Amino acid sequence: MDLHLERPILFFDIESTGLNIASDCIIELSFVKIFPGAEQRIKTWRVRPWDYINKCQKPINPSAMAVHGIKDEDLKDCLRFMDIVDEVADWLKDSDFSGFNSSKFDLPMLAEELERVRRYTDKAVDINLHEKRMVDVQNIFHTLEPRNLKAAYRFYCGKELENAHAAEADTLATYEVLKAQLDRYPETLKNDVDFLANFSERQKIIDYAGRLVYNDKKEAVISFGKHKGKTAREVYNTEPSYFAWIDNGEFTLDTKRQFQLLKSEFEREKSEARQRASKPLSESELDSSINLLADKFNKGKTGSLF
Image (cartoon, rainbow, N blue to C red; front, side):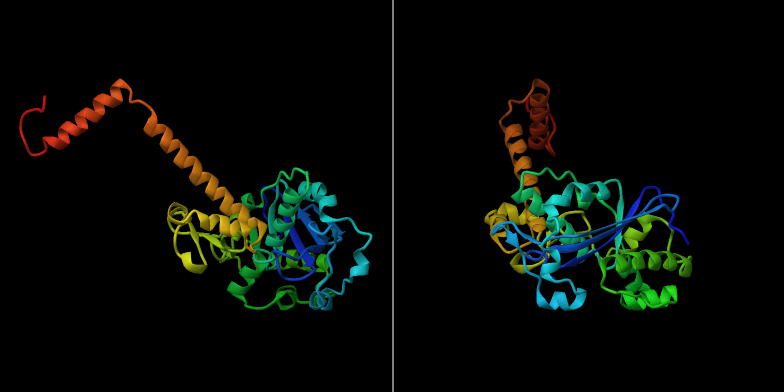
């Protein structure tokens, strides 16, 4: 079953120097963009992992190399992520997203690379991944048929996945699996990206690392450490230094950015409140305040204060 699309959806997969989102880097990035009408475009980059602070190539973790087979010398002549960021942003814009386990790894890793470009270069990166809808095919799969991508491909598509852990092969396989899931579960799944994004979303997270989540009241809540379960607003009001601790700690740049955005929001609200408090009341506001005080004073009594 082909996807019912109102706008393009971008399937993507990442290979990296390791699994630490805060410190590792993308070394291979593959996009498969599906347009309404089923037109398909593919783009894959090999990326030289870059240490922005020490200004040198970042080495690949041996355990990661054992999985994807990419070596440091394979990347020495490749462009860095900051060199391709404009082209990457063009592929990202106007699209929804999909991937296999991408909510937990690929999307946070992509966000981290974008934040590094924002922080360490003078390039303007005009893309906000948090505005995008994300269909995580693994979450759909694990909800309905717990397996991994290779087993999912065998189960839904009836064939073996060749060249597993190559970014392009995994990305194309993910696209095929999602279409097969729509065919297999027509009574459970709706061929609609908004539905699929909600179905595959495990929790309403604010930052990709899940340090901030939404509660039932749509308030930002801290999900770890000594303030776990408290709203970010409550923590800011009682311990504003906590936000500085986050910014100086070993957290992803995306997590730091979301805390900073909340801090800016809370500071703006306080500033607006101070301005309102210092502004003289208009004649109508003064009359209203006098009437409220008179009503309160005379509650349960007859007559007037004046």
